[in-house]
Amino acid sequence: EVQLVESGGGLVQPGRSLRLSCAASGFTFDDYAMHWVRQAPGKGLEWVSGISWNSGSIGYADSVKGRFTISRDNAKNSLYLQMNSLRAEDTALYYCAKSGSYYLSWFDPWGQGTLVTVSS
Amino acid sequence: QSVLTQPPSASGTPGQRVTISCSGSSSNIGSNTVNWYQQLPGTAPKLLIYSNNQRPSGVPDRFSGSKSGTSASLAISGLQSEDEADYYCAAWDDSLNGGVFGGGTKLTVL
Image (cartoon, rainbow over all chains, first blue to last red; front, side, top):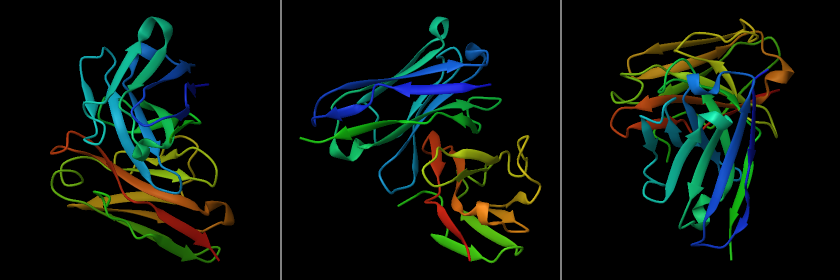
């Protein structure tokens, strides 16, 4: 069974940093691209960032470009999101999701999410 | 303001057929496939339809997807109470070089 477990969320002050992790199991991690998608409280879904299987292709939403960095460690079956210069509008539940057959495909499955709250 | 446009709400009675629309542009739906996600209250989103009209294993055939030009739609037939959820369309956008979602449609089963 494919499992994605996010961690690293919490309460952080504006301007500070946080690093999210996603532990993957149940599939050959280095065969698939991975993504981060977030959902602000009571709001819709927003794609944040994606990374191909070998880190050769990486993309970011304009809202996080220059502040967030996605990475992966295939030896550890893990995905990461380094979030710097955090803003109140980054407050959201952050989901890790496995890509479909190719980098720019669907998201399936999703983890349960880790909550990031940016507030002073 | 979401890049893809969905109606904020939809409703139907048990057994009825409901459709949810998703409107985009040439840079997203017009040139890429559309995926649909179902989010039940308090849970993570789940893939419902991929590549415009493909159902993942385990998704009932009551759910179907279609795409024409820069628009797509999700149809749910034989509506059931457990279908009450938020539904999101999504696609890749060649201009933005990233993924885009619709604002979501809250489906109520009356």
